[in-house]
Amino acid sequence: MTKTLAPALAAGNRRPLADFAAKHFRWECRDRVAHITLSRPERKNPLSFESYAELRDLFEQLRFAHDVRAIVLAGEGGNFCSGGDVHEIIGPLIDLPAPELLMFTRMTGDLVKAMRHCPQPIVAAVDGVCAGAGAILAMASDLRYGTARSKTAFLFARVGLAGCDMGACAMLPRIVGQGRAAEWLYSGRSLGGEEAERWGFFNRLVEPEVLLDEATAFAQSLADGPAFAHSLTKSMLHHEWSMDIDSAIDAEAQAQALCMLTEDFGHAYRAFAAKAKPVFEGR
Image (cartoon, rainbow, N blue to C red; front, top):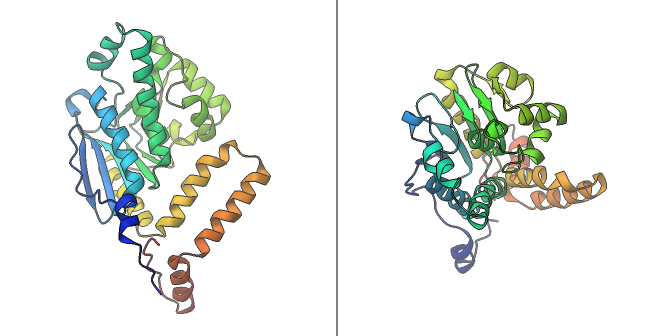
């Protein structure tokens, strides 16, 4: 029997976001898959103070979005993202005192936190330039599809900054390994798509002309799957970094027991028994 959520509880914790109106990038949602497209192609899609803040706020709102189940993050015009805009961000930062600099670095870090804590899996579609904060956005996504012509660089050392930016020293070693992450962050060098795939940064490489289609198809498969279970997988992948094995096993036992209470679990069993494909409803 389907249980009905109390309207007052739903009002405070479930909000539609498919019709969100973005100001500093493109947003569209079809079939519960949202597309975030960085859309300043004439500058290779750099980030501004405004787009950082809007992205942070959007990913925080996605925690409550019942009509979005997966996200594709991409750039317009053959490039992903060139990082923070040199003139709109880097220049002004030089003249700021410490409190305002910390305001900025905390804002950028809060964007990564919001990406990791939103329940929807994020698939980054990376083509062309993927540098600086752009590389961080790709890193903070759950999966990364790339192209052979993509060029990914954590540029911070090349502009006099440490590689420890927006969680890079915590997250990148878990993706590519400690030694490779150290080389990448110390050198600031650019990795082509094939090398980045060998290192494990990209889940797979595809041709540029089908990149968005392939990323969207995978995101759609996630959106059509058991949304609650996928959200728990994402949460456990994130939180178990800081757990010992016994704690992780105990946490996963609780998470899996919760999934066994969902209607999707019952749908899957009945579909299997009937030799049919399950239709997941996300609850």
